[in-house]
Amino acid sequence: MANSPYLSIIVPAYNEENRLPSAIRHIQDFLENEAYEAELIIVENGSSDKTYEIAKQFADMHNNIKVISLDQAGKGRAVKAGMLLATGEYRFLCDSDLSMPITELPRFLPSSTTDEIEIVIGSRETEGAKRFNEPDYRHIGGRFVNILIRLLAIPKIQDTQCGFKLFRAEVANDVFSKQTVMGFGFDIEILFIALKRGYAIKELGIPWYYQDESKVSPLKDTIKMFFEIMQIRLNNLKGRYEKEI
Image 1 (cartoon, rainbow, N blue to C red):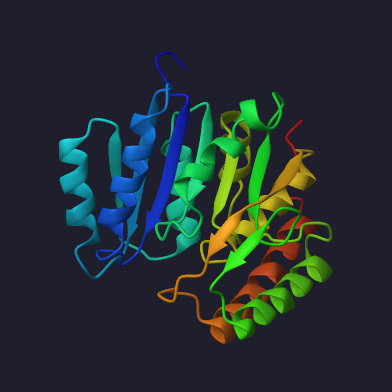
Image 2 (image 1 turned 120 degrees about the vertical axis):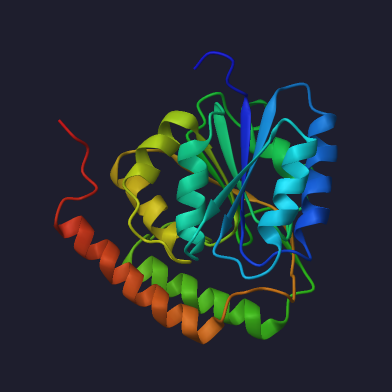
């Protein structure tokens, strides 16, 4: 696409009025030191606080910031909307808590990995990863969830749920157009679709800082994720993820 940016950064934001201003400033400061053109897409989805108003204020001050407002919650719904609206050659999913410093982003891009990038996912488990300040019970719970995911959906990926992922534009348009899971389990479906359709996925070890304001409910969301995995398996049996001939 003519005049499209090199990079799109997609930030899903649900009730993030406290953390969002700092996140936007850090991302904007980072982008100011990069040579390429980039857009920042903030997707507010069903917030009950002032997340949308704050995002809109920043968009009014910066030409590279776009804001989408959805009337329903669901992280997967927000990410899908942002990825399909984005126009960048590469599209980066970025959690608003910046639990991975935004300065790590260049490691995901072609100059730091490979010229044939299709998908690069941040990982808290693979070689080179470091966790900071995470309670043991959260780490153990996370590993249990990953075992469940590997047994039922994606055998070889150590960390599907980290909120930092890079997609080449054509890949993003392809896999996100097939997405049906709108909750926290969307990562599993997206990676399942990508593998089903033959895309290469690279896990990149990252430094990750635990945030105690996480909106994830370990028990409730694990149960919900199990049913989302069942939905993914059913979709697969129905041929929903096959490439069109």
